[in-house]
Image (tube, rainbow, N blue to C red; front, top):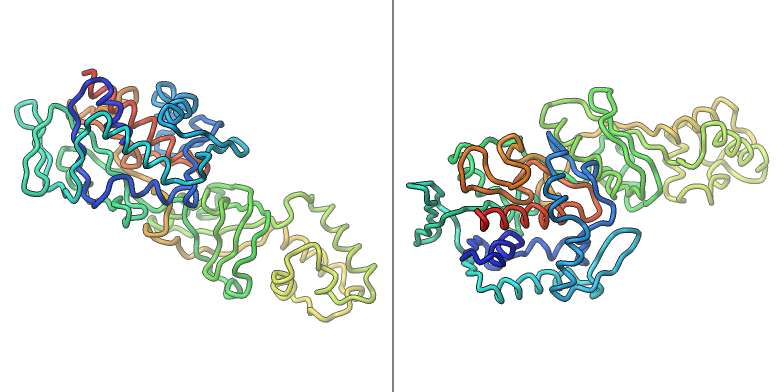
Length: 393
């Protein structure tokens, strides 16, 4: 939609071919239905890729300020929360509605239920067969998404057309997705949310880390910090590597501070059990697991716990380590890692370096953002660049 609007504003005659029954369905699921459409903090460190710096030329042409101004011009009043921007309506549907209205104002033709059978270049023109029609165009932009959330239409069905045009893909795996864990105690702590630091290790080397509200699930770990490192886990599983996670459940305490806190809680609580002594420090549902994993009886008198057991528990709370067995699939992923290799795309125009007149935008490229509106920002930025350069040229 952004590519179509940007090209049409420069006078291009634009047709969008959409294989779903409606355009822009994926927007409705963003930001838990509220659409976190950009973030005040920007930079290539907010994006992942084989070449993260690839995003910079697009962000320089159409970045945070341009995005906020663009949506304001369409009627979206911004609401900021800690640098995260949402429409004041609190509805992702508002963002989709204003984009659709702008497409209509610009007389962009939208063909829905229109699956693309082939795309080929013939005598400086692109021929696209979709449904029972052959469309002929001077320029062609692939803005077809990746494989995440396939019900929205982002199902990878266009990848084969891109490969036939000579492009290669960095293998596509789920990203911003829940991870599954091996220990059997996870069902008993499902639903617990806690501030934590997660360290992800691939073949015993740290591959990523993040801090925030972690959520335990029946199968493993979820929440923003787990999502942030999940792309590295998914890539490692694809490569048959061993993946482990280590949680720091008390990130505001140093090792020594934690030992003192635990010692004080246990030794000065002669009327309490070990379980009771930890209430107020950890979620109640989590305490039995923490004690059992460190061979401490729930009902032992707190004052009877040995210093060695306290030391062991303290270390466990700072380094709760377990093996991961996989991630959820594309159907539950917010985005995906991988896509068309950035080495085959001109970063300043989004034009293919292999086929002139062919452009790319959005998630189909090997770029994925962290949580916080970055994947939508990449959609707006790369869509704007692809659309404007396709029209100008």
